[in-house]
Image 1 (cartoon, helix red, strand yellow):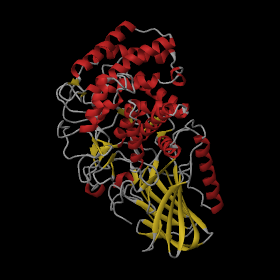
Image 2 (spheres, rainbow, N blue to C red):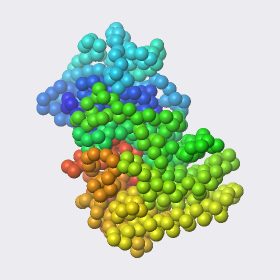
Image 3 (cartoon, rainbow, N blue to C red):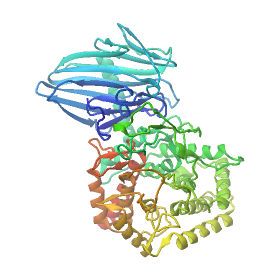
Image 4 (tube, helix red, strand yellow):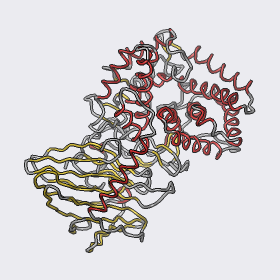
Amino acid sequence: MDRYPPIADHGLVGDLQTAALVSSQGVVDWFAAPRFDSPSVFAALLDHDRGGYLRLAPEHPDGICKQLYYPDTAVLVTRFMSPDGVGEVIDFMPLSESRTATDRHTLIRVVRVVRGTVEFVLECRPRFDYGRAEHELELGDDGAVFRTHGTDGHLRSTFPLERDGQDVRARVRLSAGQSGGVVFTVCASGGEPPETPTVDGLTGQFDQVTRFWRQWLRQSRYRGRWPELVHRSAITLKLLTYAPTGALIAAATMGLPEQVGGERNWDYRFTWVRDGALSVRAMLDLGFADEAVAFVHWLVDRLREREGKEEEPLQTMYRIDGNADLPEETLDHFEGYRGSSPVRIGNGAADQLQLDIYGEALYAVSEGSAVAQQASSEGWRTVARTLDWLADAWDRPDEGIWETRGGRKDFTYSRVMSWVAFDRGLRLSETLRRPADVDRWRKARDAVYDQVMDRGWSEKERAFVQHYDEDVLDASLLLMPSVGFTAPRDSAWLSTLDAMDRKLVSDSLVYRYDPAASPDGLRGSEGTFSLCTFLYVDALARAGRLSQARYTFEKMQTYANHVGLFAEEIGPSGEQLGNFPQAFTHLSLIKAAITLDEALDAEDGR
């Protein structure tokens, strides 16, 4: 067992309220419960010694590991091959039939041998509350209970368990055709313990979960060139969505570094208005209207909460239940992934001013008739009042999309998305025939446009730039043609795309910006941003540069991990960095694939 396996060396399983990472060595080294943003139960990925883990794997010096998903599901298989035999661990989480939030969540690990004989070792070492809470073990004939204040962890197994201090170990030898399994359940203290598992019972639960995912995926309308890649991204977005509210989290993890050993280690288990809003179009394009509508309802509820209050109508991010309180603190007792500290929980960027979120919010509300028709009279009034407010508030420096900590600036992307807010508001007002101060909104929209064209353009670079004060390029502006601010083949835009090719693109991978040229208030460097590379593909396809777009898209696929997942960044040696898997990357992958498919079909005359 590696102390710190590569970030990409994991698959994701979940139950639409929380999720776990499983390494290709059979180790659950990240699991928080009862929600995505709850304190961790297993967090060895952030501190091998203090974080806790659940390991189920053979001990064989000549063994080879391979990990894959059952096709079209979120059921993960980790296969162990050795001269003595071939065994598998199958990981999944049962899904609740209700969208009601629950404090009870179960991770099932089925073990079976398909050839020869394999001895599996089980180690269960939970460390509750980010490793800060002690627990006591109660071990009986029916299994183990790890008790701590307010929470119990129940471990049930088809084979005998042994005490190892306050933790549990076990060994089981299976031959070809034999199966077993363990069930780990987290619930409130005093909750009903799970039943002792049987092979037949575990098989039934496996069938039920597999059936759910395949039935859900049948809704997909995607018939393009990359179905496996796109559908894996869709399943990943679904796994990262909190079913009780429809809120999409940015990533399943916290604290994983953008630079190993550096300080860029953030908690991403929250709902960014930006990420969730841009996911609406991706899910609608694939045919998943329920998910798109659920997020729009969640978003309008956030706008409604602050009406009449002397504060910004929206915060940049929220907890999955809409709670706006995300105080940032550090876990000083955790060493961090390979020494990357500090490890942070909460996120101080929630208090930043990021004016682009209003454009993304209106983009989400307006995209697609299936979503727009959900605009109730009360919801429309909330949207209209937000735009009335923005008409007076858009022309201010802010922290920008990348949440820099180097001070507020006049970011061009923030202005572009303010333009989007007014533009989509005007379209909605006309489509829905709803009352609005359209003259005021139109005047504001045109003022934003004129300002961007005058001040966001650099004659030196012959490109649109990051902010008005310097000639720094920024990959966020790759969204300009897709939101309609500029025509995708306009000469000014093509010149901008050429400038990005020179300054931000490295062997088809795209950096967000150059921190050396535009200091962001943080030490260290970062890798290329995977979502920016997919935005680059989208922009290239819209510009008619199809050979370059397809090459970049298909080359980017080679940076996915072994089960088709992407973290936030690609490092200098091709390794994945940052929180994992990242929703923004997967939704931009879907967007790029659909745009490129349509452009290639048009070229082929289809």
